[in-house]
Image (cartoon, rainbow, N blue to C red; front, side):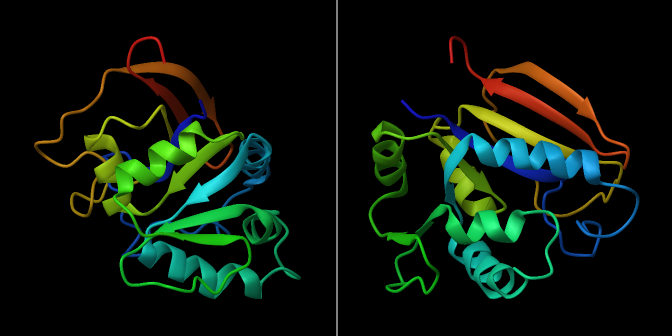
Length: 188
């Protein structure tokens, strides 16, 4: 069975909502070591799930920067298979994309059971919240930024039943960002 991995850019106080400008992936100090870590994750993943809003934002940006993107993200996102849960979207309008129109847990369970590599969910807070609540997340990869906001959408909002987490890896980057990898549940 494939692993479902939630990958998020997150503040020290657990906010993953990037509004307000705290997250600027191409700005700031040397991020080359962080870019290499992201590229290594790409190599282990052959499917990405985006919520509809995140999908539309990604679709509107990444195909337009292929010639100028030095990180490899544009090339990867344009070729990887993308899934977007939506009751309203019928045509995704981005190569290698599939609309998932059934119940989210059923659709993701079927993806996890199909042959392939890791499945990553990034951004897409409402989708992530549903998958956490359904106990479907195998791993969390949290790119923790040295920022405290005090408000905004959180990975684990108040009242969330947080799965048992086991630290699998920590990596500090020159930018001050720290990657925290947690495996969810016993025996996963």
